[in-house]
Length: 178
Image (cartoon, rainbow, N blue to C red):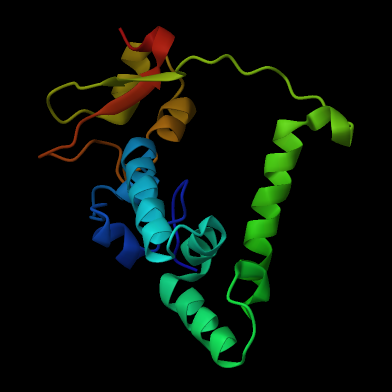
């Protein structure tokens, strides 16, 4: 559908959580801004569903109204109101079990015959604030980063430049930020 970015925000939900979507940029694709918005949204859903993470996560995928109606319908029919009791679209019904499976695999990869390469526990990118509008390709050249890498780290920008009125913030690999 029209979801976008790392956390797959729909346009309306993104705007509700403060993510700008303009000709210049789409903050649903901004790594930092969208992560903050996703955390806020998940906290809201967790409270809304009275501390039930399964319902909150299902609602993140399928919409809080959809999950709420499924809970109400299930209760009216005398069935349980937990996630696994609900009648939901296939995608939403599979969303929580897939995340639970990933959790189990990451927690104990050897149990599944897997081995993951270690990932250093340190930041990959740093935030650079040039203070004015910049051409992203020129910034990549100055930083010694490929344009592909620069655009991959800064996917929120819809144009070759940062917006004239900001934000101008760029993410760069830590070793290239200076």
